[in-house]
Every structure is written in C-alpha cells, then in structure tokens.
Image (cartoon, rainbow over all chains, first blue to last red; front, side, top):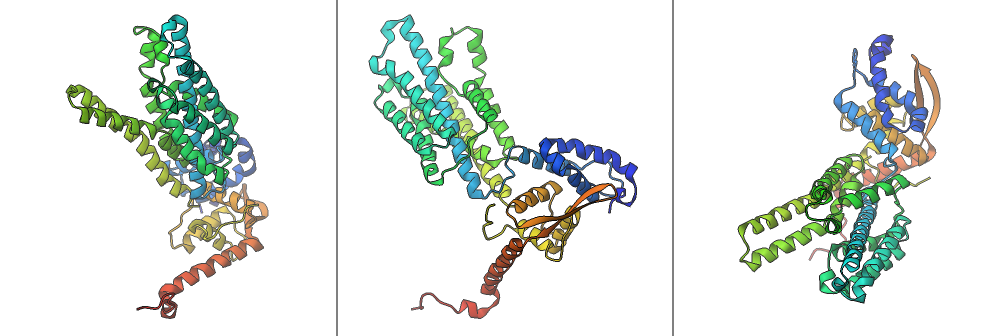
Length: 318
Length: 115
C-alpha cells in the first residue's frame, strides 16, 4: 500500500494531479466514467513517497488513452488488425492514384489549352479525367466498404490504363491500382468495415494532395518558388512515413498499411536500378542515384511493414 | 455482445482466473494476476481497464459494487456465469494439451499405423 493509502493524502496530491493530467489522453466521456477509478488504482500501485509517474507508467497511460480515443482498444485479433490494415492500404493507394490522375488531368488540360499540338489524341484527352472520376468513385466505394464496387471500378481503371498509349503509363494508373486490387479483393470476402471517420478522411485527402509525388510541379516554371517548395516534397513524404511508423505504437494497422501502400515505390526503383545496371554506359552518379533511390524506397516500405507486423502481435496479445 | 474465441490470450486467462475466488477491485486484480502467473503477467492500470471494458462488453465480467475507500473510487468486478464457463473450457483445453506431454498413453494414439 502506498503512503497515500496510509493517510499521506498530501504526498499523493501532486502525483494524483499528474496522473489526472496524463489521463487527458483519454476521451472526456471515458474519463468521466472511469477517471476516478483509474486514478485510485494508479495511486494504490504507487510506491511510498512517489511524487511523479515513472516514464514507463506515463507512456503506458498515454498509449492506452490514445488507443481508447482512436477506438483501437476494441476487441481485436491479429487477423482483425491485418484486415483493417489492408483496408487502409487500399484507401491510401486509391487516394494516391486519384490525386496522381487529377494532377495528370490538370497538367494535360494545361498543355492542350496552351499548345494544341501537344494533344496525344482523343483517347488520352478523355483518359485523364475519366480515370480520375473512376478512381475517385472507387475511393468513395472503399470508404463506404462497398468492396465489390471498389474492385470493379479499380479493374475499369486498370483496363483504361492498359489501352493507354505507352507514354501515359505511370504509377497512378499502373502499379498503385494493381496493389489496390490485390489488397481489395480479399476484402470482398472479409467484408471489412473499417471506414475512417470524417476527420480521418480529411487528413487522408490533405496528406494525399501534399505528399504524393505527382506531375503538378510541371505547371510551374523551373525557377518559380512553388516548384522550389515542391522539391522538398520527398521530405514531407518521409515525415508522413515516420509519423505513421510512430503512430503504429498506438495502432499497428497504420504501419502495415503504409508499408503495403509504399510497395509500388521499391518495385519501380528496383526496376530503374536494373535498367541502369544492365543497360550500362550510364555515368556513375546516375547509378549511385538509382542505388540510393532503391535503398530509400525499399526501406520506406519494409520498415513500417515490419514494425506494424511486430506491433500487431503485441497489440493482439490482450 | 461478441463471443470470445478460444484459446484465450494469457493476460485474459489470468485476469478471469483472478476473479475465481470472489470479486476484486483494479489494484487487487493487478496484484493477483501477477501472483497467479508467477510474475509472468504484469498489467499496467490502463491495460487492465481496457481489458475489463472488453470483457464486460463480452459479458464475461461484471461490476459487482462500487465504493469509496480513503477518498478513492473503487469498483469491484466479478466473473459472470458465461465468464466461468469460458475459463473452464480454456482450462480443459490446456489440460488436454498438457496431457500430450505428461501422459504417455496419449502419445500411444496413432492415426497412421507405422510400417
């Protein structure tokens, strides 16, 4: 029994205050229902004369609070975590593809308006806006957990991409929808209903627009400040990945989802590296850049995936 | 209400076991779980209450009474009938699994005759 428990109420006051401050990590209704009981148990567990929570204890309180706040503390098995993670991966991939296609549509429209000679024919003129609409509809279907519609629409987008002229092949209508289809197909059977809340959707849209590498910088001149600012986008993308990696401690689904969604990048960069290495005749700096690109993109996909997998085991323990 | 899936995870098993001899409050439960598991399972307070929320939703555990001791709110939790059944089913499952190691006759059962 702690000192406070033996009547040392004054000693426990700062400790209790600090516990109550840490409990702010929990949502207000939960604190109203459980706060006093939780503080009572924490004070019972305290060492005699303890005046502040240990780092480990503070971390555990905040972590549990964030899990309750984000709804992660619901009953979950490792299987549930993986189903939810792949569902999130589909959302990430479709958001990235939609933004990518939207950027292509804007850039292409800009080219046509400024210089009609750059039009690549009626198919490509129609392809960009059409693919954007199809992918956006697939994203909306995935958010509402309409998995059959999602799979059907992504297939349509892939068919559109397949018939596109070779110069229109890019991640937005190539690898990312393939991965979305791959991770979306099992959802038809699992019927995962892990649609994010409105705030989550807004965050997803903002992150997709800002962090997904697209053709949008082409709209601006080489020396414009917008383009210079955009050159730091890779840092933003890495920051988002690191943020998701850290949040995996609270919710392992995010790490797995980001790892799965990022898989397109190592595939593309390894493909480029193979082309440079096999092709030969490239200056050494090109080869070095290809190697760095392959290592960074593979790390960016594999580390969150591995961390999420390990944390999922831990989070499904209780 | 969701139906718990066997096998139970170790912390859940010891949490339910801690209530076998009667209702306990949070602090007592944490200490009992630690003792029953030989120090192998040490639950943080937040983890305990997350588990209690889940087990209450699954109707395996329920609040027996609430009281205030030394100005601190305490809730006492007890095992429900369903909780006891699940715990016994898990214990029987583990006992069967243990017999494979401890009882030579269990190893005598052969699905395929050796050549």
